[in-house]
Image 1: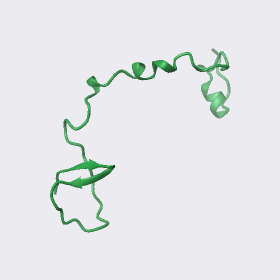
Image 2: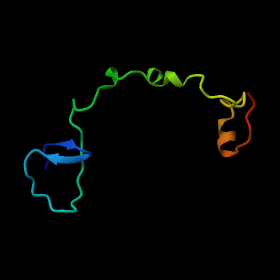
Image 3: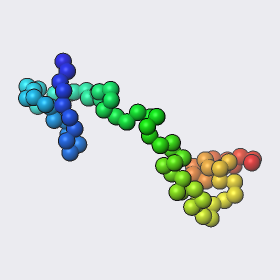
Amino acid sequence: MSFIGHIRNGVVVFDVPVPIPEGSEVRVELSVGSITPAEELPPLYESIKHLIGQAKGLPPDMSVNLDHYLYGTPKQQP
């Protein structure tokens, strides 16, 4: 079965009354056209470019040894 509804305040609200028993498991699928296509979204770079160059005091080998600094894995050679 499928029913049509919309999201209001984070909750699915059906367009017509639907006799679904309380506690029923449901699956929600977005309709085509209800989300912004990827080609209309700005590239990730455009969204976060204001952060470029903001990190200060990082080790010079941070990009190569990120796992070492986060998780303690052995350092890699740059």
